Amino acid sequence: MNLSYSDCQHTFRAEARDWLASAVPATPLPSFDTKEGFAAHREWERCLHEGRWGTVTWPESYGGRGADLIEWLIFEEEYYRAGAPGRVNQNGIFLLGPTLMEHGTQAQRQRFLPPMAAGDTIWAQGWSEPNAGSDMAAIRCTAERHGDRYIINGQKTWSTRATFADWLFGLFRTEAGSERHRGLSFLLVPLDTPGITVRPVRQLNGLPGFAEVFFDDAECSADNLLGEEGGGWSVAMATAGFERGLMLRSPARYQEAARRLVSLYLAQRPAVDRDPSVRGAVLAAWMRAEAYTLATYATASRLLSGGHIGSESSTNKIFWSELDLELHSTAMSILGERAELQSTAVDCEAGGAWLEGFLFAQAGPIYAGTNEIQRNIIADRMLGLPRS
Image (cartoon, rainbow, N blue to C red; front, side, top):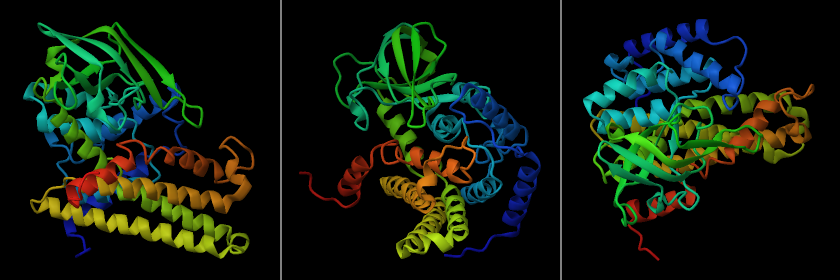
């Protein structure tokens, strides 16, 4: 694989690096799982949009730069290297946005994409239900059609960003008596709709990164149907492909974590080298981060040459979620008892950030489809193994 960059790509990198150097806040923003932090990250999304860096792969007509996947990877490398804030609207920009471009009408794209890019509308994901987690085909939340509107009843849970978000996208059962993948529709629902109740769900760190959403005869315009009525499963699978594939978790996220891990190890080396396994764990994590980067560049190059990504997106999801656990678990072992100090503690040093990352990494093998489900997909669709 040729890893050299063109002159245009070098120019793109330099432009991104210069802009980020001037725009990234000098002090970290509060967590976007707080009301204050959510508002601050919304403003950051608006800042990115004004610089035309918020949606680099989107067409220029929707506020993007029309960048290809290699340029996106370059931008992500510069973004994480600059220590830029997390993307509070990643559900919209990286998941729903591409889905709208693929399945939405022209009117829907014009209506939803510009405010999404500008940070004016922040999106929550409404997949899971109490008895339909990784098995999305078991969804029971109903949306009954009445002329030009749907009446929604039921519950969603583990809805990412829903505590403070403006809109929710999700699957709803629109055909009475239908089962499994049939009779599902993909709807876009404003969360301030009468009849909707949002109840925050606390994470391990105590902050409401998720929410339960209850629908009690909530009305939704039929104009907010994405794709065909009853055809929501195929639309949702497109979204899931973006979630498990390249866009949600760029390799730069893990490269930067690996660099921080190496720095942490070197700073603590005299003490931690008493256990020789720690050095090996640091090296293994760094190499896996580099391997994921190279694999992603190879996939991006193949896509740019007319290829496609299908069930292999499941291998991506397993790899980056387990890599995240590996990186943070190794950091926790280096920090020892100090790893348990929260970021507000006087003597936490770098421990607070690693603790937050470690707690979040526990969810990686669960969200975006559990890794057990992804392994089943790989066995069935990629390896052709018989079902039990």
